[in-house]
Length: 429
Image (cartoon, rainbow, N blue to C red; front, top):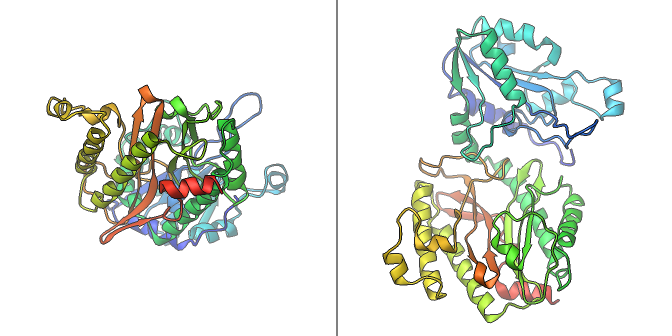
């Protein structure tokens, strides 16, 4: 890993919070992700499962965390099982956690090697009545591919069919939504690296530059600041490409007179940042582009004022929709008659602003959090309204990351330029 070791008090507190919600005589199990193969002997870069990472800080494959708060053996109330490291592995793959390093990383005092798992787990299951299993219940999840967690659940249910199985995921949605101060510091670091990328590319963008050249500049800046790279696949869409919400080809020329929509963010220590800026390729907005840009910025500034603890995301998005309606009417994109006659299930403003305004962010770019329950204080959100006018080959979206507090909000990207004049000044410096 490129990042410094994180204070293990974060993981100690996270486990305490999770364990406090468990049933009596219950244990919970969390598995690492697989290393994903591609072809021949090639693999993708390892990306840890964010649940075991959030609970332990262990950022390597073939790891299992077991929590059993009421185990009669106090040494077995928190257990980590790791692949045994050796000199051969260290030479060929790099150093893995030994027991001393695992204790320092996680704060868990009892570490076993993975080949001891079945023996120890059988002892634990003779005492437990309930087992918390960790299924992926994110509302946007694609669960077609079987994971290491899925395979373990199948194995456990087949071997121990009469135990009572419970779900960990609802607790994780509740708990992971509220960020610890250490997490906020890590997210701020990711946002600060993203800022460096923004300031690098603004003077670089010119007519004739290719979208992928901008992507390359960002890669360079992120890696040199100890990030692993992009938190998600970047969107760098110029002209008409800016109207494609998930455009990722990034292979077109940026042309004079176009606006380029850039949606990207650096990760740091597995924490995501998520930013969008829309800038004129030639360094100056046209009158029409500026009018649309300012409209989007007004919606963004209005949205963050209504994103507050205690409100549901459904309520919030209805209020943001009202803000967007006014702007679209003023831009002559929709009329009051369109609004009067609209389908309530797909309001008139959705023709030009068809996606949601905010999502939770943290270890996952689309992080855990309640969508139907009130927003908790201390949660982290993006705010990202946009207007997409396909007939004008113009798409503008603006996005920052925020911590939502009882007293207001903290913009983790407050130092990243967003006002049109500042954008133009930096592009023409």
